[in-house]
Length: 392
Image (cartoon, rainbow, N blue to C red; front, side):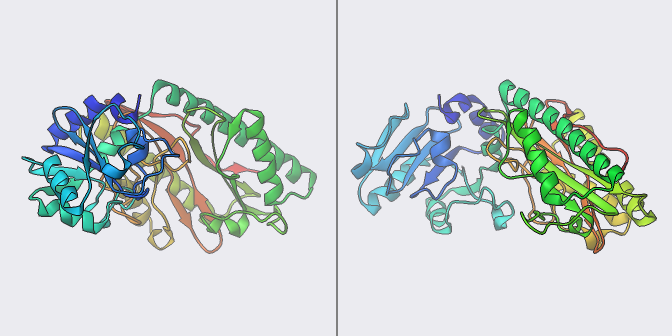
């Protein structure tokens, strides 16, 4: 069963509740990262003309394809309509939205949510010329991303593997510090990869490991040769994984340690980051438990406000959380972002997210990251939660 068929009732209920007459899922030569996957078009299908799936708020979806490709287009279990000329294409689009006032497409006003804004401006112009208002399908797409029970179970397994790997990394760090023995970032990174793989996990790339000033770079990756050697100062470990070969979803945490007693500046920064992270959990939980809607940028604002009030605004380089995915740690649902983008997507139940504020001064960086699962009326923290600096 395709994603669309499996969630059709939820999609149509959302369209009706939002006052949207239907959804046009449009693609031209792979321009949409969503259309083929959602509709169930196999990846090896060769399509060179425009096609779209019309999903009315009530009634059965249908697909419209070029007549030249009708024979090769896969059977999606929907009524099929065809066009040949450009005039026929315009007529077919007009018939698709006949009687509609508002249509959802992969579009974001002002490009606020670029992750979903994939339909080209010309096609948006064409649809608008048919007398309908185009609105964003961002939240419709999210309905197709909610986690199954099996994906949640896989996420929990991944979260446990991250905790065990983090603990093994801390043991190795303590052993080397106690012995006065050499350890560089790449060696620790390699050891962490081995720990995760032994636990049946896979990852899109190796964990982020930073010693000292390299922790000031949010996406630093240690080189194979010449990476930083462990010494007094910050240790940042950002690790993520999913169950290998499964449909489970990623877990993703960041943990801080410090070789030697941390100075006052590091302690104050760590405490501010932890307070901001916890405010994100509190804010999101309160809104969900209260049955209130909440958008991604609002969570980001609640987290960021704590750090801005503490004077850290010049050192905030990224959003404060992201959705978790199945293929990659960074998912396709809403992100907690009001600075890099303006993520106006709703935070829906049945999805996983990170909350991960970071402060990056010239001398060190501090980031703390945990994962949450949104529920119908509440929130569950699914990963280990750091409350104190691990002093080595």
